[in-house]
Image (tube, rainbow, N blue to C red):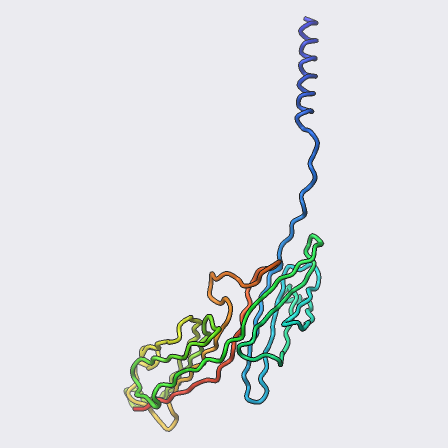
Length: 254
């Protein structure tokens, strides 16, 4: 009996030694990870005939310290915006023209203490040139409106509005308004008669003109859902350059 107890004790001690030996030395800890900053921003060019200017807007989330931002070599200060929970900057810039390259660098300290830099490369496209249909044109049908393709534009931000002063089937003057906003890669849009003209319309009613107005703003950069971002390096996100375009107006007639 005593020999059996002693044997069990020896086996238990041997098993403990084996298990202890299997643990071995602990290896060194891996490097601390970091989360890249998230960037959203835009550059919007206003081709004013008096003083053209560009408005620069940038938002940075996830930086543990105030980032340093340069736009084509010029530094711009950022400040923390508690409403957006991000570092932001908004500045008018007077030195850009259509066709100019845009280079942005965002320097910051990562949450693991290492330096980080996010980069953006973009381009200011030229203004769009809508092709004006023969004006005035007859009312009642579809309206097809197109504009010339713009070098450097990945798409177009289009605003369309339409006002109709008409007489209904009872001869009573009425006003009808319709507008739409489209973001497209095409250079032509068709506006259907069902949207443009009220169902009870019998005739145009003057003296106020019936007109339509179109603005097509060229965009450089990702703007459609699901597109990959254009921020590289130690950052992710999206940046666009947009050019304002003067509105083009046409009139309708009976």
